[in-house]
Amino acid sequence: MIHKTRLWIWAAISATCALGLPGCASAPVAKPPQIIAAPPAGLFYHRVEKGQTLWQISRMYGADLDELIRTNHIADVSNVETGQLILVPRRQQITRPVAPIQPDSEGFIWPVKGRVVAYFGSVSDNMTNRGINIQPYAPSAIVASRGGRVVFSAPDFSAYGKTVIIDHGDGFLSVYAKGGEMFVKAGDIVQKGAIIGRTGSRGSEYLHFEIRKGYTPQNPKFYLP
Image 1 (cartoon, one colour):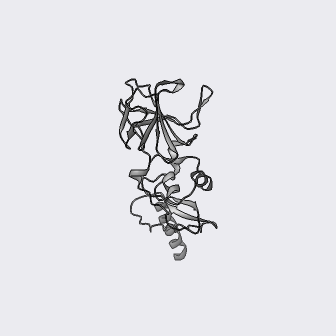
Image 2: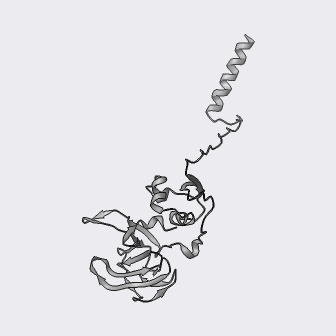
């Protein structure tokens, strides 16, 4: 009888604690340790640091950006987070960065502060977006995403409207279009972050921004912090 009474009391206490009532202390639940599998042959891991972009990581190790995206099955750059492990194709047994990149000097920055209203690859009026459309939070300056030389400037370039193209000297170009006003002309040398234009005052206006590798449009979000 005593044994059965003890079992009944233990069952009652367990049920009370399960309901989360006060007076019940519970031992902390130990989380299983994270197990990181060894990388496949020919690959190694890079841990993403704060502010790093996939493009910067690809340059650090001399890897092709498209190959990096395919290897890691990255469909949405917003899923890449600080601390995440990225598989990098090994080049000649290199285990350290071959050319450390300073993010402040080599990386791209956002040309205007705002929200993205149309993404790379989206289709509107039977036209595929080759960049991103950024609607500014308020009328503001448009800045050079990276330093370089202005190779094209037009007040009304077809469907692009006011357009500026900057050559960054390493095969990359950036395009700024549909801005309210552009201040630079072909031949001007601009530094990263320099003001090249200003957005319009109407809330519906946006800046169309592209990054091109040669003549091939790239998804800007893989390059922007």
